[in-house]
Length: 488
Ligand code: ADP
Image (cartoon, rainbow, N blue to C red; front, side, top):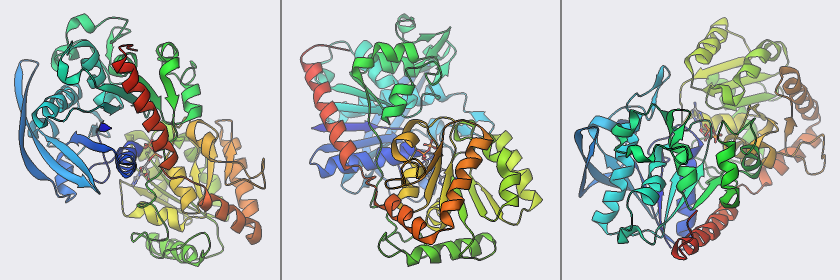
């Protein structure tokens, strides 16, 4: 199959979260399966800074949006054997961030990502690459299924192209005032309750859910949850309407990149059979972060966006208890200003056994997964979650809230002592979270029991193989449907 993956972030070119990992690892796995897969993303200023080699291709696109003409160019890099195209448009993407700053999103995001989506379709024609499937991710590429269903009419170039739209996080929908329609070059005739209109605003995700041939999300539990008012973020009804075409496929991990046996970013490599290196990683991490160096004290890691979704209030409420307990806590993250300020205040207090690291620090993250005994992820909701998959693979036993992808990947040791690979709790409340932490600490005290839990965690299959096979099957059904003329 010819497959185009469209995403607003792709590791290692630009990343703010799990989407970037997915948009890199899935194409690599599909390529391994023999498909002609290519990836396209914007060329942000920070891509160049990160030192990725991307050469200029001699292709340009011109698009008029909101009365202004924008010219974009194509650059090309690679991801193993997968070509990665990057859309360069200095005015819109030449910034050192992707979507905004801690103070808020860039106000011209509708224009930026409309340019991206529209230029992708132009570039496909210029390259004469006719994909069988265009796989779009999240609101930033939502306009593509909308355009293909409602704008291009019977353009023969796209007549045989099916669209798949994946929801990585329903909380970010691309919601804008109606004036954004002009900025995105979208006809007001599409601003209806049946498509883009949502309580008087433009909702890009809604439009894509209703336009794509197939809709997916990133775990089975989240796929169920988003059809309820509690997790549907107002789109539960729209999702219910597409429930026949809505599928939950659990993300995998790029197990070449995330492999403790070969990872050069960590101090010592190790495997589930030879765990000694992991002990060394813990000591080295303690040293690097200025914690007291001790093999015995349990070390809990946490890496993630500092936002409400990740349960940061629970962590903040529990910080005094963590500080008073015989353990060490290492936090790495960046995100909303108000939570960052809160953590900064705790950091300044200088708690001896808590290390708070604010910022996006790619080199530090693997060291934390490798050096931690446990990994805390008390999310309010979690579509899939990659951090707990990385933690499992690096033998940092996850302590998670039982929601979305966390519920699908972590088996509680107390519930199932033979198969358990972590600890989980149901209520979104500090005491429930603390109870799970205490249960983990109790198991840790018995080295024989603990080693078994760590091994089971590390041996869980978190690779992409299974998921890529499921996407392949969905692509085929999308193509069949498209060619059979039965739209969604
Ligand atoms: P989300 O996509 O909701 O942010 P995921 O768990 O799916 O959460 O993916 C998060 C990814 O981003 C993981 O690979 C994690 O290690 C990485 N990450 C998150 N915050 C940071 C940070 N501050 N520094 C380095 N890596 C981070």
